[in-house]
Length: 132
Length: 418
Image 1: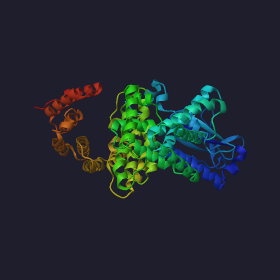
Image 2: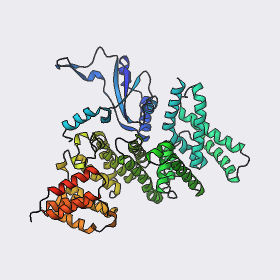
Image 3: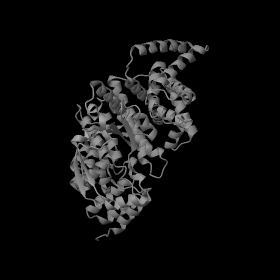
Image 4: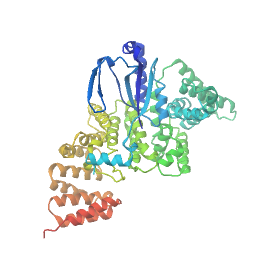
């Protein structure tokens, strides 16, 4: 099963975290390499700070509002993610706990697979896309 | 942490660490069976201690240290040890000293040696597969037994016998190099390929452990490709597996019926796995020398993966790739597939000529796809009566009920113009 591991950084620390020391980079590279050599890493990316991003909000009518960063109210922001293939949630958590992190949270979330959906939804997906 | 939680976390640590642990120990004691016993013993100690002390910060290192101490202990205490094992004690001592000096030793080398030992030519294919899943996959004997639909005692015996065979043959714990590596790598790749196919053949309703074999094979394939990065076939194999796995959601209907490749809903193909597969194939292609059998099969799979629509498939290229595959790895099934590709690329006539050449192959005597493909080609040529009898023959041969219905429908739809 697939898991997404989000690296969540407290908002106040963004600046220094987006400017890591060479030691931090080396530790993270080692960790990523371990994941890859364990045959578990599907993909990973680091993200630019939210100040350089934007948000598209939708209200109850579906109308959109675009807001450019930085965002005042953010308490925690995603700094990057890993997509891994693990045999269980426990295994994913074990790997998450090996991230060389400080003052951060690694959130582990299982990725939905088609078989997780009830059968009627699967069939709806199939007929919608011409699977039958 | 509750006892149940600790128990779970110990099991997880075992899954994550066992292969490296066994590999590291096998390098010291030069016997994979003994190494596994030591690792298991360390696990038992962990099960006793960790519920009280908590899981240590570096559980892998803890298990390794415990297992090493246990090895030395065992050997010292056992006065009936044979001379050979006494030598082993000294050897282990030396190795541990060397280890201490060499803090960051290449764990990858040990893992690779473990893989090559599990897939050693003194073992039969079934034994190689079982041992690889046990020692590298960290699967339990009951899990492997379930995956291969045999009883637990059969699988346990198979594993015990495999370990004994390795010991008796004095198989050295090492990674072969040079030409020997080239000779023995195909056996390693074959084991991974077999594990994948066993999982791929499983149906949706089955025990989860069987489809889980695909993920296990992908994991092993990715590990091996990292460990022997200069071997094009290692990348060829993982490319093939990633691309095949990308179709898993599309290859069966919700009711479990199989869907043929050209009829699959391509929006359900996993783009991430396709991308990974294409990248691995590119690595294999950029290496010196022509593609091997896995690389060529991956290149064929990639042609399908690149086509957004079945009609966009590059059949001329696929036919050329099958031609190359038939040369490096000839088999009647490859010839049959080549005929299909030639039919799609150049029309039914040259394809029929190719089929005629393999018509009497004993290996295809019970293979329903031969008359089925033949019927398809004959139908395109307007030879209705011949096509009908081929479809009927294919319907008799297939074990798949739905396929039989489809074939009979095609047969009865054919009207003889004469």
